[in-house]
Length: 476
Image 1 (cartoon, rainbow, N blue to C red):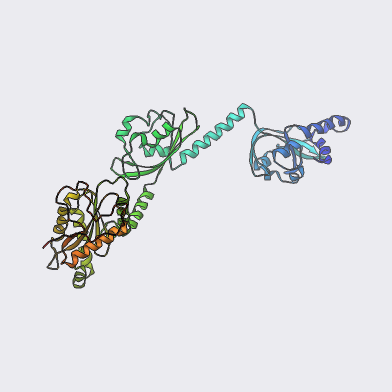
Image 2: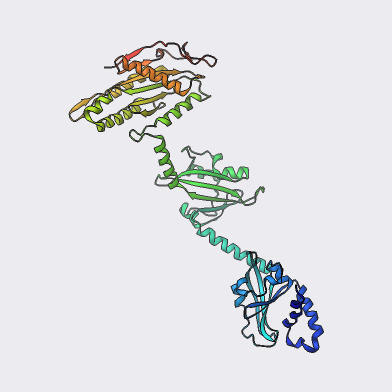
């Protein structure tokens, strides 16, 4: 701080200290320069003096960074903090202690108490302001109370549901959005870990499976003491399922008695949109069946499943003479036949089988169990397809050629290889008249019992198959 500024500090004291009381004024100069309270003087709002504590409070490198500034730059409230009569020569016109928020030169905000009085500065009226950051309990509690009120106002205005529970799951607080979500039933008398709630309000994971008690977000968070993030589904009283993003966070991590904050965000619309996009990406728009990519991915999953101990059957189904139907009746009729065929195939297959459309008039079905019934299954497929369809007075009969490949556990062939073999079997059925099934092994007439035909490669064998035995079944 410059010597000139320290010399001028004498002007802060009343004029009674001038003249014969110069020694007392010098002492006061020294006191102002070194007091722990921030003191600044302004004339008509322009800062003409600031002591060392003031520069520290404002985070200024030196006094020159503050001198010449208008006090409104520091705080509009500070500019308004002016005694009613600044023309008085004595410091009898004052402003009592007032909370003032000031902006430091670093951009930070500081909460202070300000006390202002009139003084003489270079023989002209001025205002001296003492600034002090509150440290006593009264102001600390007042500040904390104000902050708490602001926080509650913010939480009340949030669109997300917010619930605070103690370490036992007892509700301590809920905002209006939470009360709306729970239809006003959420009170401090409720414990969210009450076993009866699990039965009355089941929750579901992203796959639609009901969550057991230990997997529910709050239960898991309370047991582990860690934050959880989940997407869960719940059913409203009207049966509509809503999806929520749920976060459970401990307020004091590491403490066994920590309360938890639960936030719930309704993501039903996002989930519905995502499901629609996923469905469009994985399903055929004409038939509603899984499309080629999804069908191949599903087959690959089943083939690679390490836990698979039973053989499975891959059926390659190709509608006969669909091109002739398209040429005769048009593509609209062809599309109708494809939709009808897809529906009939799905209804004729066992519930455990999967069915997808590869494209055009080609379908693939995968039978995961009941391989002993494979002959009956393919017979049912032919019978279901053969039911007539009446179009413009014409009865159309749908027929299909089906190629079947049996795949034992631990088969090392690729998904593409399996599909090519099933396609080859289908082609053999079609070239021998169509409307029949061709197997790359004799369909078992008795329980499979782990039987593996000789031409199936084992893990240590070369994947190339010898010419298989074949049988066909024709349907009229």
